[in-house]
Length: 189
Image 1 (cartoon, rainbow, N blue to C red):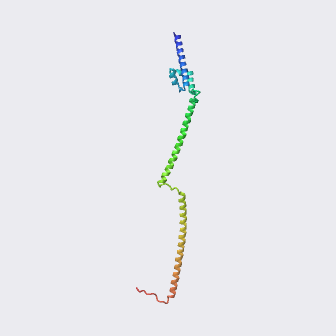
Image 2: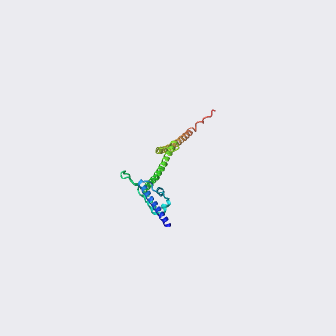
Image 3: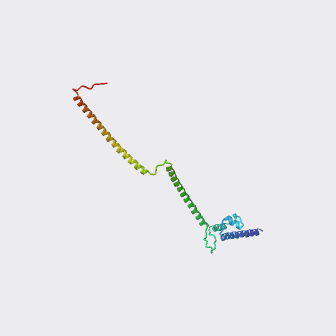
């Protein structure tokens, strides 16, 4: 009886193996997603059956990587899981680059808007700084010229005062010399 049971178990295992192989081939023909769970479900076996039979597990994994079957007349290109993963990785890398660029542009926009608001508020530096610096230079030069002119005028005034004093002294001395014989003016108050 044990040999009959053993033969029955072997036949059951063979039938399961056939169902797994047929499920893999059918999924590949249809272009369906191929995973261990999907194949086990389609073949009507437990996933542990596939994990216990390494050769079947290798078939499932090989089918996952193979391009899907296609209709030769459709002109559609075959797409493998590996190519899709590569496309996904490229898309993710592009997303990271674009996110970094967006952040850079947002910072630049924020700075530009901040500067514009600062200038429009009247608190910021005027935009025509060069004209203001030229005006400052002209005014400083004018200030130097006026200071020199004032010093010259003060020197002329001091010279005129000194000349006036000298003349007054000279006139006073002449008047004293000529007026020694003349009476002194009287006080009539």
